[in-house]
Image (cartoon, rainbow, N blue to C red):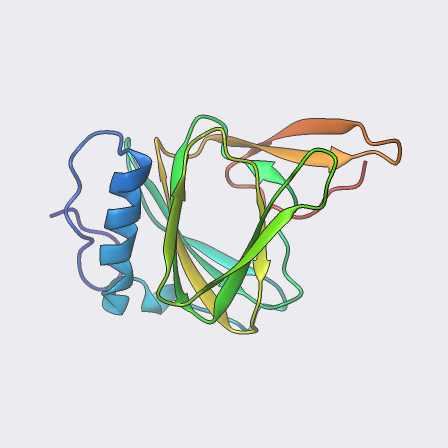
Length: 170
């Protein structure tokens, strides 16, 4: 078992980059064991709180705490696949659509989803006090953040994985 700072040990990892489906199964198992991540949950920071739970050469795991005013803005995860487990409340996920409104859904506690590196989305809190677990493989190094100009031009800006995602102006 791989150990982390904080209580307990994470579910076993295969020692290689995981597929989206493997990430989804892994993050669902992690979600079932709050003793591994509960110590990182905070809603007293005045905004979206996020904390790194674990990182090695194959996987990057984060705990995100949401309120309804929180919004990541449009972004991708560069070369990394990802999976999300909502463990409290609910989050929104929106996917852009050319020539139409974004496809938006609410993902409630107890649900998981996964995506490949070609996935562009934005996320936000659907309920104050929400918590989600995010796993990326290979680990995040950079992400793309998107803006849309007044005349509809889409632009991508590379950002570090350590930068906080938020909507950016064109």
